[in-house]
Length: 88
Image 1 (cartoon, rainbow, N blue to C red):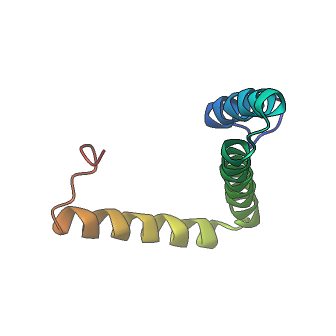
Image 2: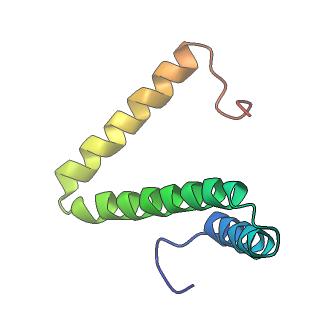
């Protein structure tokens, strides 16, 4: 895909949805497909909204404010004992 918000995660989700669709056409069992399609659509909306947020930050003070908030959140997580690199 040639969209700026498209990711490899979306590609994998799309592939899984297509497989489930083809399976549902053969078997008539549509529940797994519907759940997978819902997750895929939610992920697309999430990606598009993040892109829109990034584009809306046009001035340096807004970008600096967002960066500062991100740093505060990171500091608070470290302070609370949450390891940024070992949270999986």
